Image (tube, rainbow, N blue to C red; front, side):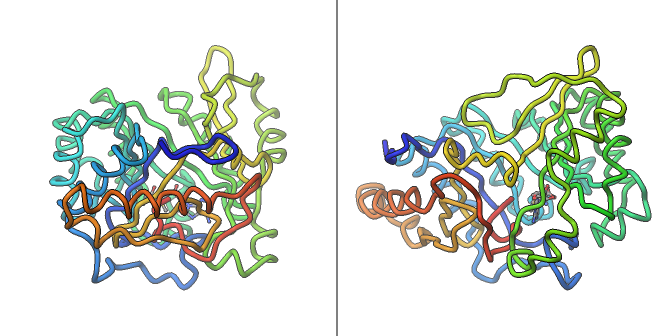
Length: 322
Ligand code: SAM
């Protein structure tokens, strides 16, 4: 097992199946152009081998499939059915929900029961303005169907001052009524926002603002969360839970256990570091040849983690896998 001076190790792996996305969210991509798949993206088989090697070499226990938008990838069904057979405690999916209705049978058939769906507003026009792709009604229908099928659902919202912060309470009510857990994600200084301090500050709507707004309507108490959780968790007694991933306000680097594998075969030990480590070439090699090099790269990836706080990164989330 590879452990650093702070006792951190990799437990949670996020695999970005593709960098392509059917949205072009304002805070993720600056120019409104949707991202397409990189030409050198790995096959489903190679990515599955990557997951298997990382389970063994790094001690990965939990996998989240993400992107880009994972459900638009032609590799999705093949990848999921193969990783479902690996020795993992949990597999979950982060999606924007556009294709959720269509893909629900595949998710259920492969035992996937935990889903994070990104949704920044319940207002159809604002939705078009922020996501710049897809449509709200399709996401809401997918969420209803997934809930009816027994999926455990978290909704991810990035609150942006002046753009959708007035949607915090409506989205919270929407989630509480359906038994979904709403996760507010504080805006991160990623991609173009890493170079635009003013733009970042103008839009940032942090933990204190959020809690003050929620307190106008609800009484909440702090709830417990796993030691390496990234979210502050709160309970509204008798109604349900919500969380805040407060990377700026309450940094969680000290307990971070995440490792990311991009669709093109790069390992990222930290969202906030521009270092990355190529393992695509190792995945064609037999275990005894691949492992020594893989372990060296894992030590370097773990060394990329920030000591205390997230300070931003030039790479956009869709490339690394959010
Ligand atoms: N397409 C999928 C989705 O929409 O959930 C998965 C990939 S997306 C990059 C994962 C999450 O990252 C989304 O919830 C998105 O809102 C979030 N995200 C992207 N850029 C962000 C930023 N700069 N700050 C905070 N969250 C961001």
